[in-house]
Length: 499
Image 1 (cartoon, rainbow, N blue to C red):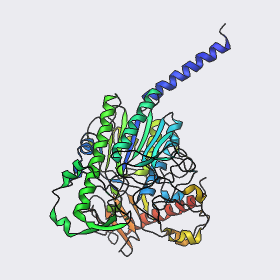
Image 2 (image 1 turned 90 degrees about the vertical axis):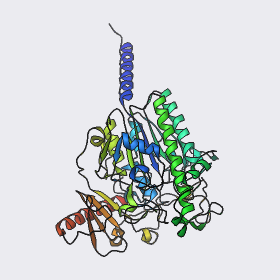
Image 3 (image 1 turned 45 degrees about the vertical axis):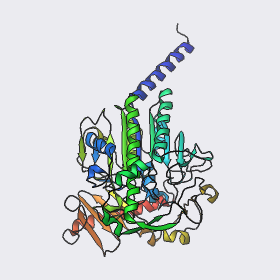
Image 4 (image 1 turned 180 degrees about the horizontal axis):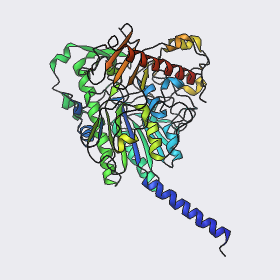
């Protein structure tokens, strides 16, 4: 007769072995994002000056997402959509330096539940990264992190696992890639699949480039000197004005350095035998900056706008085990698609709350001719928050960041985050530029410098210059109705109804 203890031991070994086999079959995942990196600022999209050989190779050999959108025209909200699969207005991340809410469920939580080792490296910007923060990477499901409250340049000051800030000498993009490589090694030793979220500080201003990267852009067109742009002074941390040519030279140097760091990561995956079954994604968090840096931007407007110049960004994915031949997709996709995609790939259920993104698993593996869900954009007008909703959602003491950066704000070099309670819905809450992309069309409502609604054909009018609203009133009204219904759902979430 077999004893109960021996039977239990056998079952434990069997279950452990089965779990290990399942984990071994799961893809590793690396999700990278640039800061203020617009759609055109890669050579593979025809940029006349930039050197981006690594991203070009990824686009040429993997899946090129030609109509990829950031979830918002600015950084913190987009990062919230990336983490949660939900529009950031649902939890009060309205604009830069507005934090998430602690009750949100992130890709970190979901992937940990699936047995993954999770890490975050680089820019966070949805709350402080110190240990006491209820919206730190650790609180949002990441096993380890080396992160910054906002953005960083050369020799970044970062926080490791919530501790005291410390300086890491080197080029910022390479610093966080080196940390990612070390994290991958630790995951391998523990026999766990891994997910690394790698958010670069580049190419956000103020700009700092290495001499060898700056030299690549010594011959930019002289006509760029005729225009000046506002940006942050490296010396003072306050606003200054400089010739566009000098600014672009430094900005492009940062992009090239970031590209090179991505190449270092890809080389490591190959050397470590991980390349085949690792999903590697790169995208931007919003369009080129509104300060005037977008010298070659082909789209309407820039960062801060719900027109494509503010929300269309580069997007490329590699997964050699499944993406076996080069493909280019014109299907509209967005940062909020990542959470449902990852949950789908690793067999986890979605959080029991409204999810705005849609799984792209079919697109990665074999193709996806259309999407079921519209993509909604909304640059919420938060000017009424302080008046109508004065109570903080999180204790202000827990919203103080610790990692310094060059750019001064509110008289200091660190960041203070905010999030407000919003218990009731007001008529004014529906304000702000907004848009919906669905079924080949894009509707823009209350955008800047327009009267009424604008309807554009995505395929025929990528620069959004021909308003079809009068020609197709039924399509316009149908999309407007979808947008209004969605806004009401978002505002219900904002009151805390999802928790």
